[in-house]
Length: 401
Image 1 (cartoon, rainbow, N blue to C red):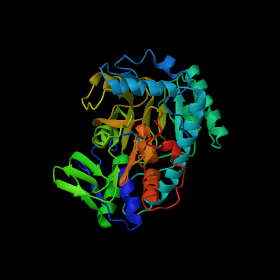
Image 2 (image 1 turned 135 degrees about the vertical axis):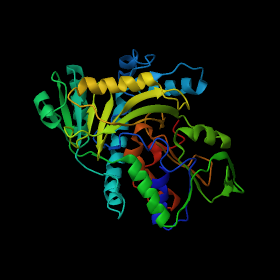
Image 3 (image 1 turned 90 degrees about the vertical axis):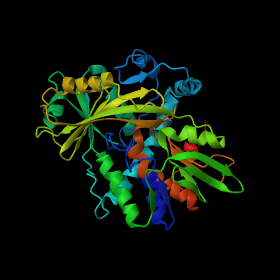
Image 4 (image 1 turned 60 degrees about the vertical axis):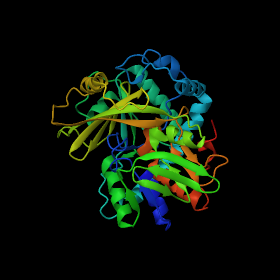
């Protein structure tokens, strides 16, 4: 969100400083699946989700795990999440998420064409692989919703799936192919766009931790950092999972939970092509990234905890080996974890909190940060520059909670 917003503002001639706690792309942007998925926009909350996932919640190896802890903010978040688990909310949210990702995809095409920005952008589609009849029925339901919104996809038999992905298990139920989706190597995209910002004269303050946020009507926003005090006419808080603690300094409550995800990156074997795959029941994404192959998945609500739960890493690896048994062992490159900022309705927070000036939030994108990043940068730039908004920002308002 930071580099995309800074780029959209710099394009408009705005003087921008990007403040980053660590190195560029040292957080959630580095190790994720890298998908741009307007066709796969169903949110996490939906009808039946509470019932279906009840057996997962306390299982440390399940796709969705909530680490037991005494937290009033987590309890409030879970209540809001439960309220969003209905058909009406799910359909509305799917349409909104699809709109954001569709606009982002068009923006990605322009950004990927920038000279020197080698980010592995490819629009090859996305294949949902279903091991069970129940999983396939759910994928067909998602496709029907997509078609009702004007999208398209193809229903694949098990044989058609094997033609595209020869290493899959022999006892599959089938799949769904979504031809319009795309993917990038996320770390290359974020670092490449930051390098372009540097060339355009944007100030990049890396290794700069924000210690405190102050705001008043008289002085506007001010940051106390490990490299001194910074003032600005406008502050865009694009701080992901760390947004609640910073926003609280100026009296703003932001309902975001840290959703920890894991990925395993290996050398891509020749038998696996360039088509991204989601293993439906295991909730695992498999993304080719040049010479690499990344397995990404799991959602763990454990607070601001960056420790590595090896049980979850091993469960991720087992799910891949079970559903892709023909995948040969190759060099292990990286095991990664990162915190994604998840709102209870799975919609991002984009806008100016009521009663404030000089402050805009761009956060809460959950597991759709790459997919929604470029359009978020555009929407924030349009807001700050007084331009008409490409979409209605009301559904993404910080005040909707």
